[in-house]
Length: 95
Image (cartoon, rainbow, N blue to C red; front, side, top):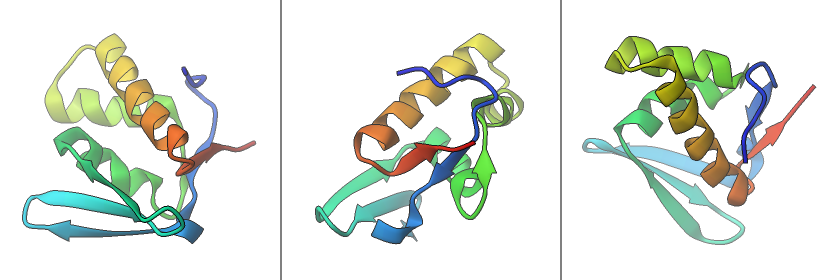
């Protein structure tokens, strides 16, 4: 799935808990008892999803700045990350 660049996206926080453990971020979906370990890029993007609404464009800009990658690559990476979160029902498009 590909989100529109300016589509507001929010994290569904009512069914998840997360903790940083050493250099990993582990997300537990309580209702399914399944967990997800985020890679370095996911760990950088996660705070933007917590407690606020963000967009693909904003998330991609974060990756461009942090990793100095091309914007198209960043958009592709963000869409892959969000697709996994959406598959697990951890995010929703708003607005």
